[in-house]
Amino acid sequence: MINYKTVNDNKCLVIEISEDFIIDNSDNIKLKDAINKIESLPEIAEIDFDTTALKSWDSSILTFLNHIKSHCLKHNIAFIKDSLPGGVQRLIALAEAVPERKGVRKTEVNRSYLASSVAAIGEKVVNFTKTSKDMLAFLGETTIAFARLITGRYKIRGSILMPIIRECSVDALPIVSLISCLVGLILAFVGAVQLVIFGAQIYVASLVGIAMIRVMGAVMAGVIMAGRTGAAFAAQLGTMEVNEEIDALKTLGISPVEFLVLPRVLALSIIMPLLCVYADLMGILGGMIVGVFMLDLNVMEYYNMTRDSVSLNSFWIGIFQSFVFGILVALAGCLRGMQCKRSASAVGEAATAAVVTGIVAIVVATAVITVLCNVMGI
Image 1 (cartoon, rainbow, N blue to C red):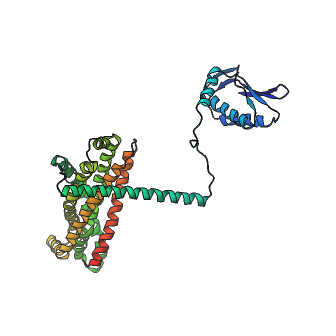
Image 2: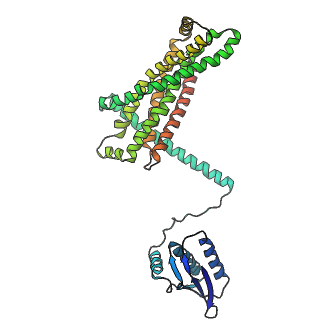
Image 3: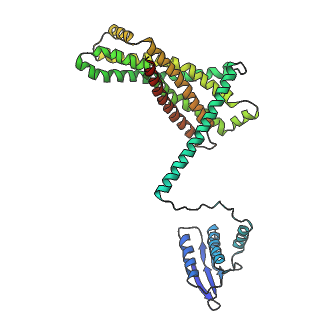
């Protein structure tokens, strides 16, 4: 509770602080009332305090008194603190001894909606520019490391490469099998709905075979690896960044790109074409299930139609796409892992960013390769 009284012919305002002064929701109200009381008495020359009835207090009283003191300094009013408790006086003296640093206090800037939008766009552009520079620097370091590997100035040990290959291949087969088979089944079912109308259900084999071998097998394998292996790469490298293991490698003179990034890029680029072939087979198998059990096609009819429809060019295009996807997914995962900040939530954010970056890279690469193949006529 705060009371006010004036003495010395209204020249001195005494602020009586009684009972407890503890942080609560009325602190701002107390301060506003005190400021309004001071401003309502223009003849006041000094402010004193009466704390004889004060039982307990905390840091909120210091905030209250500092605001009162600042107001007194602006209006040339004497601030008398001799009657305050000894602990409060020492805290005020400590606050006066260590002045506030300029630029630390947050200031509210009133901006119009247009100005705020322009500022937000500018911030996004600056962040995009910084991210682009980091990506180019990372690609440059990876290229240099690959050149050192080719020229024999650096060798990757099998004890490092083989566990990564196993993680990217054998451990990924179940999910690749399931997704690819379901995608082939869905393609066949959707195609059959229209082809049955014309009595051309046999061309379901051509639809599934061309789609899976040329594009969908590589794309689905790439998306699966982006969500599974790319996120794992980002989490592994992000954890090492948080634990300062990457800094330890740099201190020992070991390049993190050569020791951590390059083996993962090579492993995924080697395995992705094999996973693509496996995904193609599982997708064709899914289409065959629909053709045989739903469209009453013979297994040999489906097989012969698929063989006649699929060309070797389509097969190599799918293999090439999967190779590119493997490099992109590995680079995205390693890049986000190396960019991981040192906090508890940063590893999860890095894994999420790796998945998003990998999938976006796959979609963009698919569009570019498709356009190039169309231009080249293959």
